[in-house]
Length: 358
Ligand SMILES: NC(=O)c1ccc[n+]([C@@H]2O[C@H](COP(=O)([O-])OP(=O)(O)OC[C@H]3O[C@@H](n4cnc5c(N)ncnc54)[C@H](OP(=O)(O)O)[C@@H]3O)[C@@H](O)[C@H]2O)c1
Image 1 (cartoon, rainbow, N blue to C red):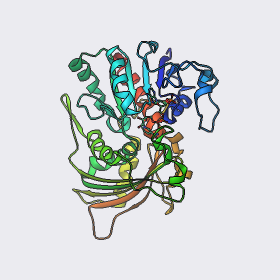
Image 2: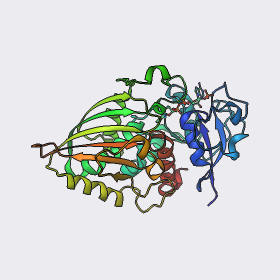
Image 3: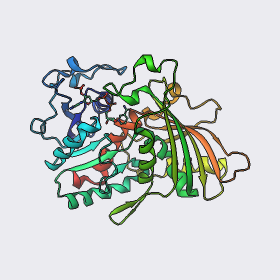
Image 4: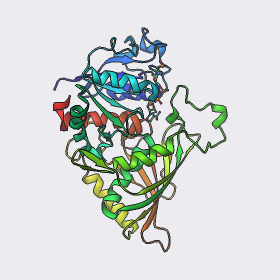
């Protein structure tokens, strides 16, 4: 097939750089435009980006001129990947969608709108049906599809097989989140504040985990997603790790479980999930990798599993005398599975399942 022309909004940021790395040799997509703030606009990409990835800037983009965040100046492309801060994304994304652009976005605005699909492809690709509802209700010629919060993506990949089998009643999650999760801009955590330290609060993060996980695990009924009805308590902390969010999860189910049941459910999910058989380029062979060693997963050792698209689970235990509970740790790469990689996987799913909306 001819590759689709794509634009990356927020191309100079942390997530934007991961988009560029992943898209530079992609079989479905070809980068045609880079967009950043007015500070960077009009200059060559390599001159304005503070490149932080270990690979070099791809030659195909290094000399591209960065476009301003002005809908009149962004060339017509088949697809837009957005990695903008949410306050900027709110107006620019909607304006682009009104003008006919298909936008797949990382920013948190509009994620909970009833007609905006919020997608982790292996978990809820069926919610992409909302694309048709959105176009009809809003009268937009374009489309807005959202990538979820990074912590939530990593968590929900493991919750889906467990909720389907044992019905989750309550869930408590405590996170240890990497520095790259705050990006390179105004939200970045200064080194002096995080070295030798843990910051026990991340603005708006706990609310996102609580609301978005219930939407993602919700059921599409007719034209609406009915949110999953379990209770979620989240505590989110920032730790001095570069990449990879580690999450300690405790779940109470309606039904009894064993450790073997839980591991078996994860393995079944690897064989059968919502995008099995589509053969998508960014889909990892195993979305969930279970480690048996007592000292795994570790961010430095495990975050690149499945090219950063798998989540790694370890220390699966059933607390003594609590036959309907389980606890485990899960790790995922926040900027790949939690951001650019999951967003590209959503776009690949659209190409395969709903080419008519592109
Ligand atoms: N970091 C993660 O792991 C992660 C994970 C999931 C989701 N997200 C979400 O993804 C988005 C991007 O995050 P990030 O970590 O990549 O942030 P970042 O490193 O701060 O990058 C922000 C990008 O947006 C551009 N930008 C800033 N202000 C702008 C404006 N007024 N108009 C147009 N462009 C503007 C910046 O361009 P200049 O260089 O020109 O300033 C830069 O390209 C955010 O919504 C974030 O919440 C991040």
